[in-house]
Length: 160
Image (tube, rainbow, N blue to C red; front, side, top):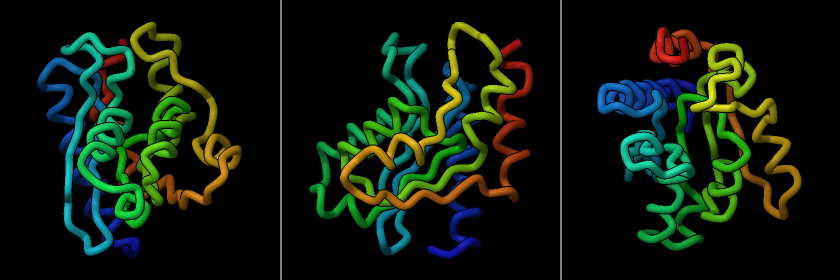
């Protein structure tokens, strides 16, 4: 995928995050794209409406994908997400064997918005650091400057 594709898919993930918020969840979204550029799955957060502490969009999507696709297939897929995956989500992506991650805004940018909100006690731990401790080279692209403002806008007023 090229930079233009990354922007297009991240904009769709942002729309999923908007839908997540509209449905009473925290404003995060992720999509899974295959090597041909087809969107295979979309996922918003479900932690609040389903009362699942691990219901982040990326973790839920990785779990769903690992049930549907083989590890070999997932290695050639890309997970697009509005915000950099947290440590838990990075672990789920790693174990699902999704080979590529593209994110909009950084975990640190998210932390500046959420502060110490008990709903999302955000880490200040880049996903690249988590992946670097593993045994496979997951490719990470982000932040994508062209979508940072749009991704952050979905969070406006949510964490107050």
